[in-house]
Image (cartoon, rainbow, N blue to C red; front, side, top):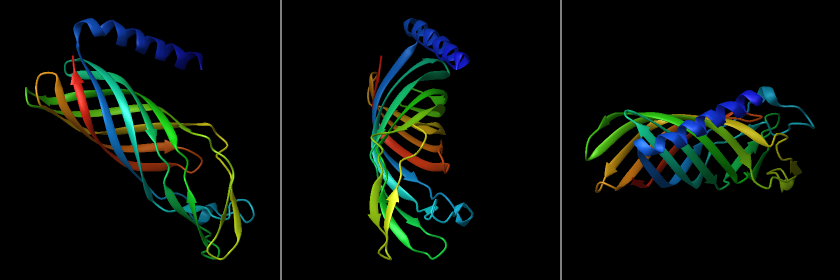
Length: 208
């Protein structure tokens, strides 16, 4: 824990000291998250994990980000808020199903990237990031399955989940200070049942 705090402190110190001699971007994004299916028949435990398999689903969200660049590298911080969605859980022993709502969650990332093609009109970039996701107001909920059984869905035991992403982006400059930012990312969430996602985002970027 002390090592991770030291790493964050060094990152922030370098981040702030670089502001005076680099270009900076502030951006606001809307996003769609295509969440992959999780679980399998092997995870079934009667009376403990009766619905081990969850279907894929999609959610929407938004994010804020700030990056500073020392050409061709850039690094920064991002914060996301994601609305919950609806997934279908399956009892792999008898194929009963129950439709449940997923939790809203927030994420924060430290990110690093490179502009591998940049001119006055566009910038193509690769970026990666690592951080934490946090389920907001998780609580036990009761649902009724397709076969008519009441099913209690408990919140996750862990409060925070390690989350990482990697992807491609495109910035289109409308003028020297304003542009459009498009991102596609593969994301991995290390939760109780690890989950992958494909995320697409678009928004406005301000350069100063």
